[in-house]
Length: 147
Ligand SMILES: [Zn+2]
Image (cartoon, rainbow, N blue to C red; front, side):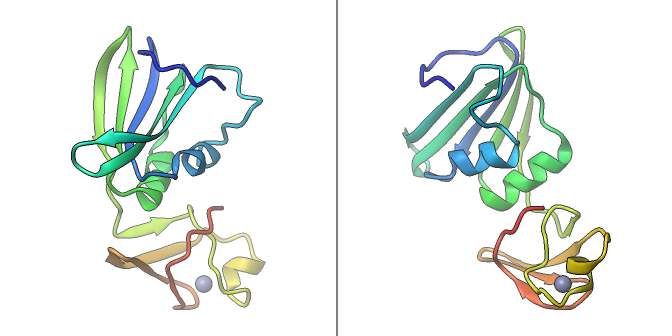
């Protein structure tokens, strides 16, 4: 992992990450020090809109929809830019979905999803602050326990 700031040729830039959450984003994406490509992490960069923000640039990596959904839960204002040949070819504003499927684990140890191989499902009751209800045990969950 390097800390230089530069434009990337191909890959993904995740901008407007909540300050301090850059490493959580990398964790969600399964990127650690063994990752073979260049990863640039900027923490507490100045942002006109939010005061401070984190930015993550990952070379030669695209994001799957499920990964973008996870990032939306962690940092609802994040923006994902897909770069090809040094140009932004796609921009995604992340958005918390109304139903969160198979991304989070239920925090209730007695929930059936904690014991059996069932896809979890949560209904979003409130987005800010984030509150979800488990489809199976109906527990209200606001803690993010990623699967
Ligand atoms: Zn549950």
